[in-house]
Image (cartoon, one colour):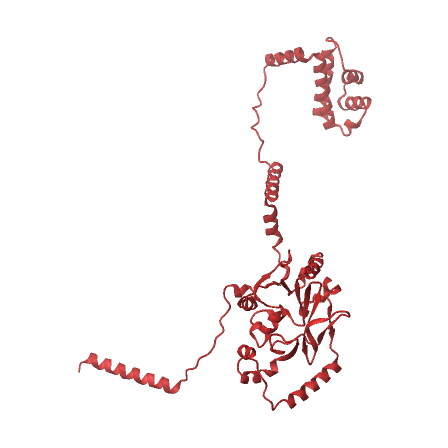
Length: 417
């Protein structure tokens, strides 16, 4: 036998011995591992309930806004009181129910703190401690009397809750409620893993009659349905969690929810989860992006116009000295076009601008005081200065003298003041 065959034989023997040791010292069992939700089930808290309804032929949808009412004859489940943020919705819901809509309210969603309280014919009251003690005593006596009797289980309940042994193990986690009339067929009681709101029971307002009630021996009525107009209002003394996640699959909860929304093929169920609106900034952009763009362009133009510049808009012209001939020609053209009175007015404006810059309060002074202020600051004769500053017309003979007085005063203001 070669060395390679020997190694192969030893390896086979080691594998056989290792397999025998594992089988003799370990135990293999199946374990159920809950997988996390995927797809729509991750974002939709009532996904399981919607799937049950769709299997029953019911069109179930959930909404995060209640901008419009469901179709007439549909079922509306309010799982939050945020719909009351818009005041007119209470009146819209009432009118919809009176036209034939079926409204489902959850006591845990604080519906009785909204505008529905004024017309819904059902209200909740606290259960007294004395009534609780009496109900507990009666329940314990009934349990002791029926302990030896086998408890009948309906086929629907057996299919939804498991074996009789499992039911016995889970009795401590369930609440039994009696239905009047029966829920479906001959099922007149429900075993519910989900407990109702502690310490509450429902009552009808005077003058109304219940269409369906669900009674718990410890707390009294936990569900009441009453007619209103052509429709109905159903109040369930439970929290919104009864519709969410995997709660509809526990015990008889699926039967309870199906009866609560009056499930039947072709019916429509709307579930209002919570008032959820788009954030302000995206909403403003989607609703008025044109105004925002124009406003930003206007702001950018204003900032550009008001911004500090690093230089003049245009390059300054070179400071070149004009020739005497050019100045004489320009002066002659100005006199020919406008006359000597315009030249006098231009010289007066030049003196006024210089005096306004150099003498405080000069622009508010009357003419006599202006002449006095300029004469005091420059030393020019007051009479000559008054004649040059106040005259509107002059002869050609007077023009040179008055221009000389005005120009002398202007230059003295710029150099002495």
